[in-house]
Image 1 (cartoon, rainbow, N blue to C red):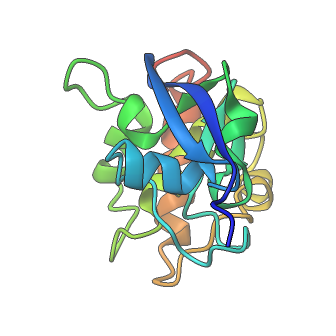
Image 2: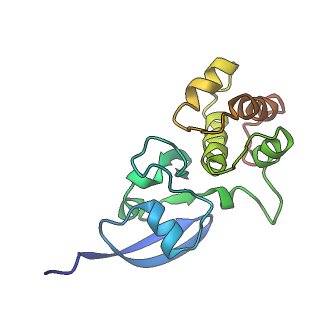
Length: 164
């Protein structure tokens, strides 16, 4: 039995460069959680359907369970941990707390990252737009009204800046 092919991968995650030797089939999600200890990104369905594993790659949201770590070589990966700056929550993270936009909290990291991207994409025109562009992130507890309220709050405060 042959060993799986290994590849050297340099990942820039939350502004820090990491050099890893990985099985070529390792997903970004597994590299983040198992190799880098960044457990904020959650493994939900492991099929790209729930959005719990949403992270940013070069500023665009991706489901990390369907993204090979090797495909992120020399790209900027931002996880929910990377949104806070010097221990201060981002505006979106604060809004999720303020609006109680979570119950069990399992989907929250993916929801927050996706919400930040939604604002940067300029897609918070209406509550219907927010619901549509957040539809890839599932909340089994049903905190959707509070999630929309948190996004609307940040959007109303000029949430298109880097500290969303």
